[in-house]
Length: 249
Image (tube, rainbow, N blue to C red):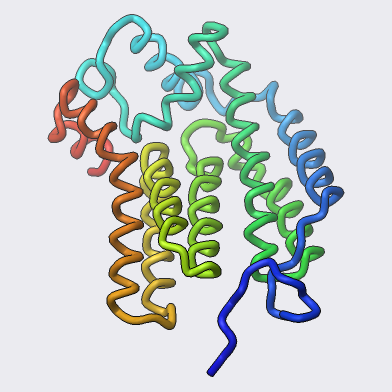
């Protein structure tokens, strides 16, 4: 019988255990990503559309209008929150919104480093995170309409899923569901992708079908705990039919 996976234990005793994070690795990733992001803060891919559209929607929200019914929008509400917060703190919020988007990108690189540590040596995880930090100029120039930055929530869901399998702890699969629910509020496709990945991981996991079912229920409960309040709020304002048509269709 094969030895079960034990997570971050002594690599001398357990050669398959994950690599350990390095502080200088983290500092290098944050520094490079932040410096690279700063180079793009003065640029826009179109204030009148890609950047101005969410900020205009944020302005209308602050004026008391309702999202989806009175304000045209075709993404989940979380996609609007950075612009909404930027407009609230420093209207019209253009520069602050860009800073928020840059922070998402930096956080994604850090999260990918920790995900890389689960499956590869630390030096490889470092170079992978550094490559992501500088290898997506289009996502940086296309500040607004791309889900790249919101992949950080999907990566956090995968890290929680890994912890659940390593510790055989259903609470962590619930946390994975929570992060997937957050991802769903920001962008549909990353949340859908990570849900499919976790489902495939559960099917491949060497456990009984009842245990897999318990994991799946815990994951679903976590995701619904985040998604249902947002759906209830939107059903009272715009209606679920409009939400389905604008966001999903």
